[in-house]
Image (tube, rainbow, N blue to C red; front, side, top):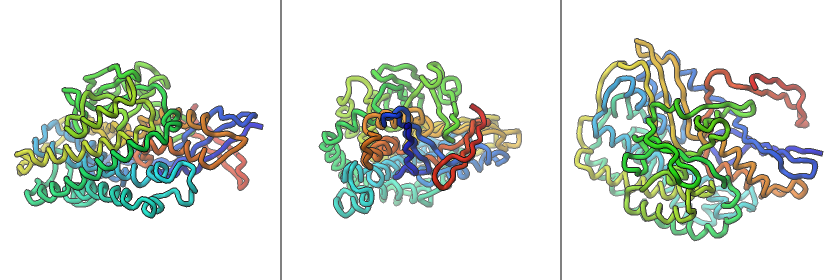
Length: 475
């Protein structure tokens, strides 16, 4: 008799979700779905608010990556104001977003995924957590804490607080960088570089232990998308969008982020609150693409910092084309931490970074504004419309995690078909299915926003888990 396995909740991720695995009569997996079970709705609740409030309001979307929403929202507001922000403000924003990437990647790798990597996918779930890592691998655990502290400390010093800083504003930032603060940040660079290089060395030696997971953790052809500079270097704050295919060939480049609606569509499914963006020229769901650290390292021509370029060149040797296995999101995160530290150091040593001119002032000059940046988890888009008084009349958010929704769903199905045996079920099998989701480091609180009226499915379940009643809207 056909059965259904439910993993609820998915653990060691940010937000609330579950996975359902459907078995046929022989106990073989024939379907799997990733359900995001929470809804936030920031797209609607911001309507009627003054546009200049949006950066601080949007930062409240998430406590893990508030800087990403803060900066991207401010860019959309710059667009509404029709101003060019001062160069120093541009670079200070870049430092903040790089610090966000460093701390968020450290959280994902060391706190959430390292228990699988260090203790094993089949380890006792009661011990498969960061505290056991601290006991069994204290040096690596300390390194993770110090790396995250590096990013968080920069955010606090620049933004005033580590979570939901309000330092980035429409037109720039509200306070210049002092010489004393610059020197304090620079003093942290050597230790942080040493830690991430040590971690990369260790991680590359462990890859041989996870060949089965590498082969089956969302390892399939897709498109990859992200921002690049004009010279093809990795970009996190400002650039054009590039899309490459699984062979590494460029499908589209020099795409204007403000024209995203021309090439990115959004679909919804009745079993999840998470939207499913897709590449319009290929349709839905064939237009599946991935974003985030793996995608960014696949689409670029260079990192443009010496140490990261060396690691990136080694990373690209994993495949002849694009690196396809989502297991390698972990590897890519470590390289991006290295890149972030190098770039922060470079920007802080630029002569104009202490300039006092850090903000432009204006009212609403455009009725629409779009901001795009690279969040830790991938390409993030904020799109606002305002009335003549500068009040928000409409907003659309495409969150990094949402961009990966199609790939996450296909990935858990691939892993479940390989590892899950319905007639001989073991906990480690299900942990591997969860671990596919952890590769993407999803931030689900960020992601659940609806465009228009989404399909909805509500089930009333009794104490035995049986469905008593069901309501459906839409599809």
